[in-house]
Image (cartoon, rainbow, N blue to C red; front, side):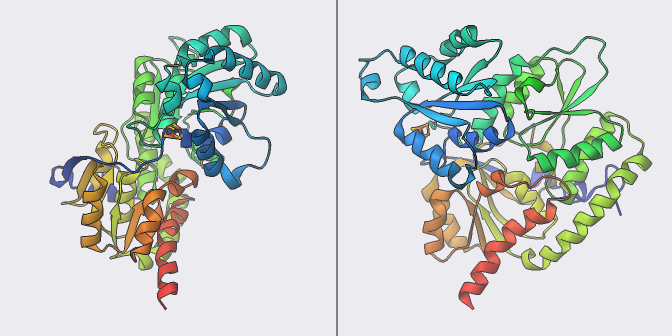
Length: 429
Ligand code: SF4
């Protein structure tokens, strides 16, 4: 049964002020924001991402995309070589030439992102000016925008935030007398988007998603826009939308049956959806999700999990694993704690949960080895060394590439954590 409004399983578990949030600074083990191109280029189907970077950047994108290239890719790297670095070539002239060649060859491109990198920042190549110049030359057929995916002091999901934040000023303005509209913010797999749209529409809520599947279908924004975040790593995008007059609806993130229910309830409350209608729309999918999750609870309940900071999804995932899968949280490392966007999640974590914001990887490794967790959620760079030490790991990047939001994906999310434990058991047996 669906719990009554205001008494979800999330609110019952609440810890609030009993959390320990500490901050660490030191050596970090993270991927840079270029990684976001891998899922963003699949989402915005007429966009192209041109990284202005080094061969290292090109290798990163190529190997991260790896098996995912089925057609002509919609990303590439304009390589900054020694002549550019030595100041012997005019990088702007080179960039204009590459962009002109690209757009002549690919008329399907309607939105071009120039993506900055560490090397483009080192040579102080001003990509915002380049984007303006190239937009002037190629609009209205092609809009050219820029953002930075540089790895200096960032984490990989910030690439999506920077990309979407760069798009916010291009969103058309809502007329003053427009009815209230709902915007769901954050790249979601199409299958997830379709399910969430169906549930919201069945409650009588018209909804748009940002980013859209095509750049020609940008949602309008203005003071009558209410937005729900679908991802917890979109601080700059949210700020940009608020500057355009939109209003954030605080909610947990749609992970797990309870998280999805509470996320939908936030929209329903803002639209004053009748409780009976809310239940009628959500109950079948919610109950299916609960049933599907119960199969994984036996495998996960009581297991001890340790999060290294990587994806910024750590706090909502920890809430899901603790409250819905009955796992024990040893430490929840996360690159940043956005207290406003994570407020509902933080309230819902079990009392005494230790959250560590930032990273000092050596100290975290020491704590992890001492705790001997059953499962470690971490970045790719740490997974193999930890496996070699006998620990069982889950790559956090997989949680960004895989559709995990919504009722229908709740069991898939649980399975992502159960699978490495099952594999370890088989290896030991
Ligand atoms: S960290 Fe910098 S140099 Fe390395 S791949 Fe990312 S943007 Fe390129």
